[in-house]
Amino acid sequence: MNIVLLGPPGAGKGTQALRIAKTYDIPHISTGEIFRRAVADETEMGMRAKAYMNRGELVPDEVVIGIVKERLEGPDCAEGFLLDGFPRTVAQAEALEKELSKSGRELDSGLDIEVGRASLIKRLTGRRTCRACGKVYHLTFDPPQSATTCDACGGELWQRDDDTEETVSKRLDVYEEQTAPLIDFYNERDLLVEVDGERGVDDVFSAVKQLLTA
Ligand code: ADP
Ligand code: ADP
Ligand code: ZN
Image 1 (tube, rainbow, N blue to C red):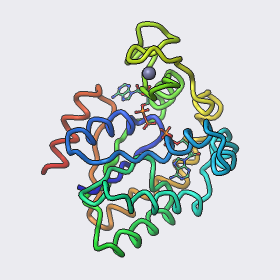
Image 2 (cartoon, rainbow, N blue to C red):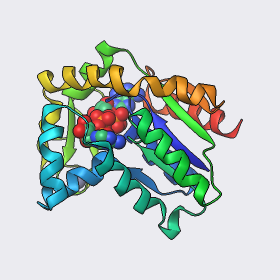
Image 3 (cartoon, protein in one colour):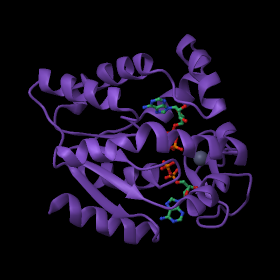
Image 4 (spheres, rainbow, N blue to C red):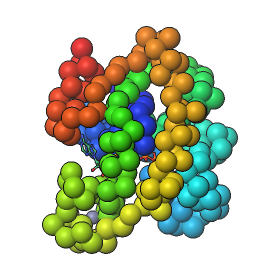
């Protein structure tokens, strides 16, 4: 199964992606994760991406597209993949389509998780992430036992630099301008699948499973 996850920042893409990847046994490819790792490792690409990320802007298409192309050539992607956070612009979606067609592949679904702005702001500003293992919590909706320590590995929990209220608002505007047009893009290709993301994590996942196997 070849899937892209659409939906605004904070919709629960990462949360659902973990479950989808496990259930369908496909690799979860998060471009946000790839960039955060590159920033932590202080690679050249990471240093370049960091400034855009901290402003709540998108990293330039040519950087992102190159990374994803390379990743999709991985042998683990041959039987399917789940892209989380890519594509985020029409140019990225077009590049993906072209790249897949070169190897005789195509997408099965563009899964859009729909959540309103008020909930997105609450979800993003309350999100806490483990520095060591990457596990994601929410201070209210999925609280860790201690606000500073990961239940799973004992690592330090932190608030992403771009999850502050000011940057969140910018990211939601960028989503509306640059990423929301992908809903039409995939709708025109009959690939769009929409799920109401305002419910609890398990209810959203049940709906996702039904839609993906329908
Ligand atoms: P969220 O989980 O809130 O949707 P991500 O972790 O997917 O956010 O992305 C964090 C940041 O990384 C984005 O705000 C952007 O700067 C950068 N980024 C991630 N994916 C892309 C992409 N496909 N195109 C451009 N920038 C990206
Ligand atoms: P995205 O990858 O789309 O930015 P995440 O999966 O990181 O979103 O979720 C954003 C925040 O919202 C996290 O703190 C997560 O724990 C929380 N969250 C995810 N799904 C739900 C849900 N269905 N209801 C409430 N909170 C959620
Ligand atoms: Zn951890």
